[in-house]
Amino acid sequence: MTNFRYEVDQDGIALITWDMPGRSMNVLNADVLAELAALLDKTTADAAVKGVVVTTGKDTFSGGADLTVLQKLNSQFEQVRKSQGEDAAVQILFKESCKASVLYRKIETCGKPWACAINGTAAGGGFELALACHYRVASGLFPGAGGTTRIARILPPADALQYLLKGDLLRTDRAQKMKVIDAVVPTADLVKTAKDWIKGGGSAKKPWDMDGFRLPGGAVYSKAGMMTFPAANAIYRRETYDNYPAARAIMQVVYEGLLMPFDAAMRIEQRWFAKIVRSPQAAAMTRSLFVSMQALISKRLLIKFAASAAQRSAPLRPRRPTLRAVPRCRPAIQPKRSAFDVSRAAQRGVLLDPALKFGEAYMDGGVVVEAGVLQCLFLQKRPHRAWICIG
Image (cartoon, rainbow, N blue to C red; front, side, top):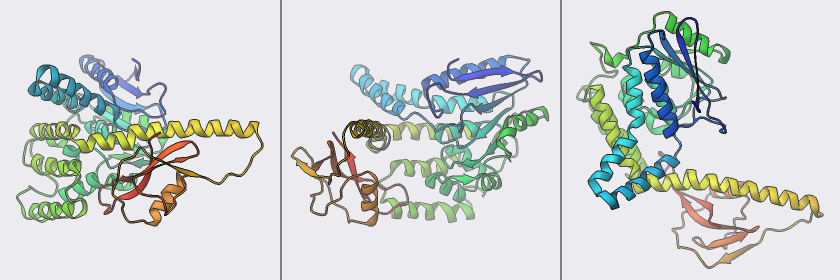
């Protein structure tokens, strides 16, 4: 195993420690899912294992999925579409995109109790792994991201939608009151508390897999449901102008999923996820806000290192930043200026000159920058100006 450490104590409790080498934070990728699936099969088949505790070997549990995986899925889709046709490409995309969801459902129904000891935050797919476990004990902050179908069965619909769409970090005491986590303990006691829960006869069944389960907040077609979903849809359109397909998909998954049994609801979530992966908005946001940003950060660090080395070898002389227009650029729509624009530009070390034309590219200290529009996140009303490195 490369990404996990595995050991079984004298009480028959397996401890799986997620610790990816060479990374400051654990992320989900194909290798992690394959290793976790092998560990699930191993612990399920071993009669000596009474239960499983999943924890992290780092300061935080997980940063979510490796978003470059989404780019690879889209590339694979295009290759298969050209060679085998649209239908074959869609089938492969759906199969690959729902691997994590299928694995987490197997954890829920494996017949042995799984507990998750969460140190720090657990975002995205890492958070869904925690939700798939039968018991969660945490310390520090807890995130509000991921697990659409499960969250909609833990919280009332109104609270679930706000939790999923805003993605705010919650303090552990509030997360415990919302029943998103089961216990809050000091970091040093995380694994011990999780093991004690298993030794105390922790249940290997989720509430929605038990007879008599009732949805928190009532059914969709109830008085409470009719007060929630029409209003939520109106607020969504008011805030986003229907420009965020992922947010719309979350609302669809919650609404349609609550009408179905859990496994059918999971299938709905998987289909919507596969659809969103193929959307141009998801591809653009993945590229601009993650892949390109990582490249930009790496390049800026390299430039700072080179500048620092040059300063050590030459006397320091004050230099006023100069911007030179570069003819290769595309036009862009100019939003209203705001203090947010100036502060963001100042933080990035770019001189924001009112005389500069929006949509043109400029040289700043040897780095080509271009004025562009950074789309606002959900519940923010206006796009803001940003400077994007293109050189």
